[in-house]
Amino acid sequence: MPSKGWHSRGYLPHFDSQEIIQFVTYRLADSLPLEALERIGLSDRPESLRDDLLDRGWGDCWLRLPQIAAIVEQSFLTFDGERYRLHAWTIMPNHVHVLLGVNEESTLSDIVASWKKFTARHCNQQLGRSGSFWQTDYWDRFIRNDAHFEAAIRYIDNNPVTAGLAKTPADWAWGSARLKR
Image 1: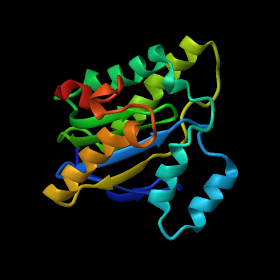
Image 2: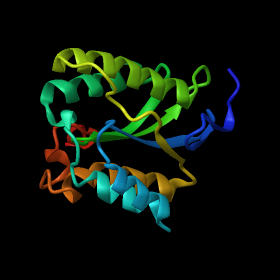
Image 3: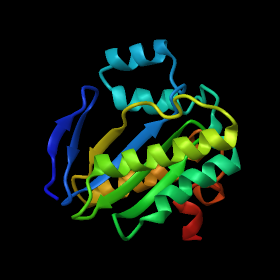
Image 4: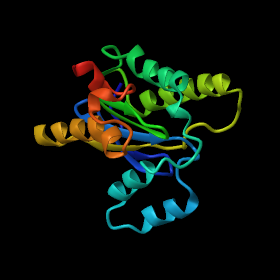
């Protein structure tokens, strides 16, 4: 399957290619109130502000429930080595971060759509609810070099610590850092 390169579904621009590693963030549908989204849109550093605002834990934070986080984590692990190669991930109470390389037969947009569709259905079922589970789009950033790769892993592993949810990255139950012990 050919890579898409730069594309958009009317929301955010994305770069989809099998030759690069991607840092992906997506969030629960209720994780950022309208005022927060407006602040992000006006910011000269929207990514940093977005990450700070997500770590405040707004919304229902369903991902803090072990049974829900387990569904999301299993969705990442299921096709690791087949459709993509996972390098790091963490599941926060209202958002997730994943660092991955996409295999030749897949696209980043298809992978993220698959994760979101599968987990929305199963999580909503587990929660006894219906309706939007995930925000429509996702944020992605392609990794430029080895230093950027290492910085992305550090960010992902340390996000629970920075947000005050764990003392060390290895203490967080829903991230790849715990597997590095």
